[in-house]
Length: 145
Image (cartoon, rainbow, N blue to C red; front, side, top):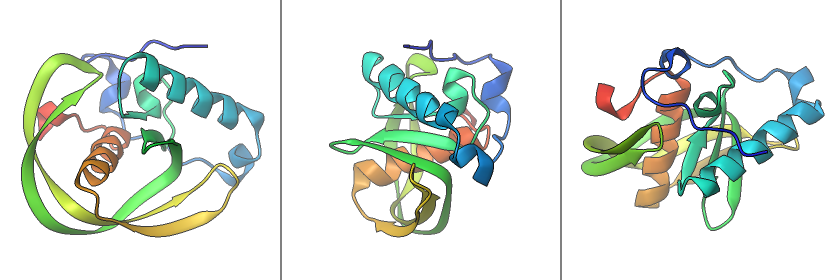
């Protein structure tokens, strides 16, 4: 099912999302949410999407990194090399904002199989997308930056 992307003004976009629990990790509902997110991201021409953008207040994001990658309970714990760049957002259509982001990050997350990862990301586009989506999970929009 392709869900509508929530737009600026929807209160869920300003709320901090709840972590996904171990029990939820074992639930087929999580897989369905991630598939719905990936479909909504693609149909709307996005390269990243946070769960609250489809009305689910859980710490899940999907990104298009040549293939769809889901990150559950992502935490960015180190940032380096800050630059300002232009960003758009599916929740704020037809608007662009200059946002300062790191070009190098360390991020921890769990995948859909429950495996935990700690990775360094130094691709400028990918680091920007991950930071943008983690901001969404914290209730922060690019217009707030």
